[in-house]
Length: 279
Image 1 (cartoon, rainbow, N blue to C red):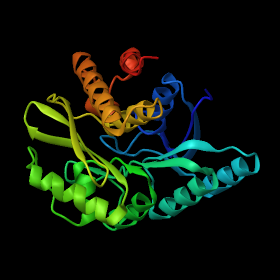
Image 2 (image 1 turned 180 degrees about the vertical axis):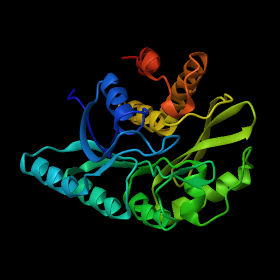
Image 3 (image 1 turned 180 degrees about the horizontal axis):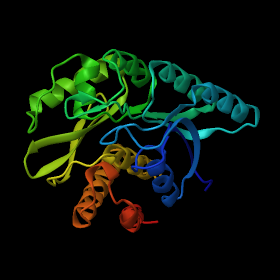
Image 4 (image 1 turned 30 degrees about the vertical axis):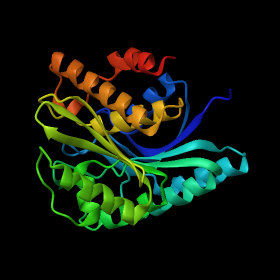
């Protein structure tokens, strides 16, 4: 069977374990060739650090994709993550179209907010533009904050009610018609996970909820989810693997007493991801 290829369109944060520095090792460990289109280079991510350097690579995004198209380089999936501007949303979509086949999946993590707030440097109009990219995607993986912002709804603190989660799922599906893996879903204090909705059926997956907040966990979840999905797992099974793997990464990080802004210690948990995938 031919090796699967993912094209990851997101930034390189040189320190802090997020975006491409998470996606590349996790997808590669799962046996998936991972090609990258960097959207920016930052000295660190923007959460918990100040004064980071930032080099915008917007001018390179589409030319990279055009060169790939000329060389007949395509992908089984295009994975978009953190994008630095409203302009990059359109550039990422154009790049995705250039390198996609008819059967290519577009998977979008609308990484822009958490805990009821937009990330530093992102303006309040950004969710409206991100919704357009989500509407072009086959699968989206927003967290609860991102879903609420894209729908213009008020954010609620967990634990959530099933009614609130259903409102987010059905509202997003109406606006995007994409399959949804809504992350950060918690109905009680001991469990956290995701809700999966394909427009007809809803399902929930959960793992242990740990008392810590680390940067980059959304990237760990979506990257391990795609790793499982492209290793022939169903949407729900892939989400369960991602929930379990992310919880294991958080547990390992807590044991190592790592600073929250430094991200999660996913490296030590890669053997467990391989076991989950039975590689």
